[in-house]
Length: 107
View 1 (cartoon, rainbow, N blue to C red):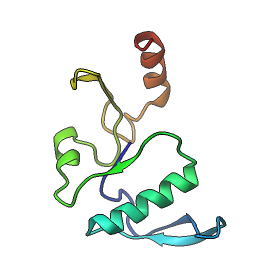
View 2 (view 1 turned 90 degrees about the vertical axis):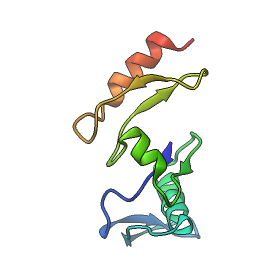
View 3 (view 1 turned 180 degrees about the vertical axis):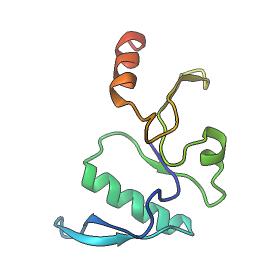
């Protein structure tokens, strides 16, 4: 997962605290890599992600290259080429479609 710029800045959502509890908080738009990393860590903790996750840099190169905003699903093959490209989200964010593709194509 690549965390790009915040899709819903200033939204009030549950955020993870350092003590492991959750509390309502404002998720701000980021302007630095440090802020973006903090948002990613909050997201990963709340969603209990088990997959690797990284941030897009301040120049938003991944977002631009993959037309990722606000969300998009891709699979990049071992050869570095795009093997699966979902449609732009949120309407095109189809996890079950990706799951079916993975079941049919990954061994």
